[in-house]
Length: 225
Image 1 (cartoon, helix red, strand yellow):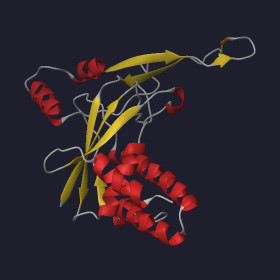
Image 2 (image 1 turned 90 degrees about the vertical axis):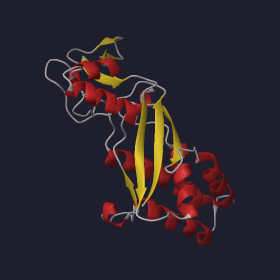
Image 3 (image 1 turned 60 degrees about the horizontal axis):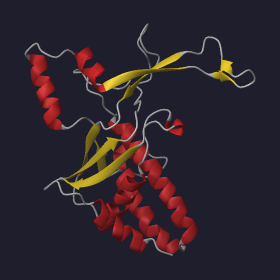
Image 4 (image 1 turned 180 degrees about the horizontal axis):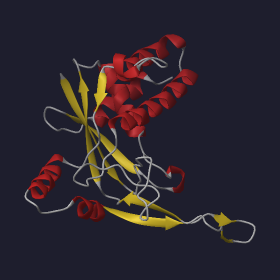
């Protein structure tokens, strides 16, 4: 198995929603583990990367002849599977949940096992609750009964996710993956309002070296018109 890591750090507050709220507290709760540490589901993360890949392929299809596009279509299928099929059954890349750095998770988990930090205290230390209302444009005032509370993960919070391949990925697959990582700039709800901005980097799983730029350079060269 070949392993790479995707690391990203929030540049603005983000809500990685879990699809529900907590009665009397928030209307939109963030995904978090049993220790109160925020996370982003691996399936969701893979979907975000696949969406960036689709945008990249669309641009390539408009700029390159069909025979050169096929090279990158094949790489995309290797990474994310065939569109319309059971992607998890055919894709070579497996994406884990994106979590806080392992050393921090282990320290908090150990403290919790010893009866120290509680889940809600940990969650509160890494997040904040933001409240907003919908505005009535006609009168310039808040609409009635539209106050909504959402929990947000604070900016500068780092995350990491494992990217596992059953065998060595091709150079084209790594090049396209690097392009997807560079294009991956937002996650979570409220992206159109400036929430969830992030910067992401691809790392070699063997030595922890950042490899985004070197693989992206290969993609840029191969995708030139």
